[in-house]
Length: 235
Image (tube, rainbow, N blue to C red; front, side, top):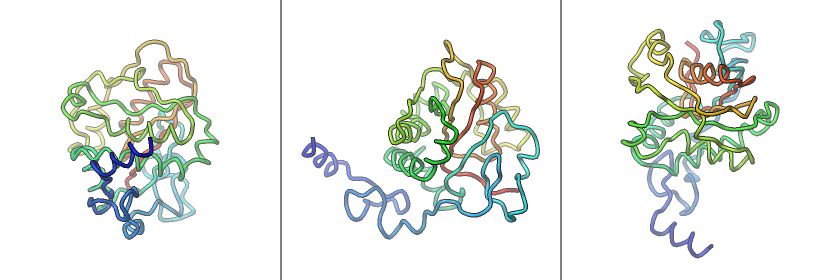
């Protein structure tokens, strides 16, 4: 098995999620010199969605002044230029190893919080079948699978489905994002869990996570939390 892994590394070397070259030293998931460019969020955060805040006196960000269907969430990194490029390559450049890297990193960073939540299952935000066929993989599923493996939590990709092919969220206003996602998800079969952790790559306004949480709660979930790799700043 070790010999097989060594050959795989030679044939398909890992690329660094920051500089996108083969990681140095070879075999690492990220270059030693690149680690400082990808730092997790510290300091005051929104109690609900975990967006970074300017003041410790604040409890909630602007978006969380209104109700959400999810209960609470955590983002790992601020969605800045380095992470934006990295997640773009994960989604559209077939850099699937980035998903594994971010899932494993997220497990280390958020382990205590997830233990407090105590979810029974991890569910990645699904892609529509047309988009999945075009891309070949779901980046949220890669992250969720690595996260679940590290934490010993089951990952399910069968219950929550995206039934509507929606427009890209990045091109829409906040109101349009919410409208775009109305009734976009459905559950199939029985929902055997009450406590669910949703996983996605990016959280901006929360429209996608919120609609997915709404769908799961209608199907019988009692608590729905989320984890994303990138999260936008408070606006």
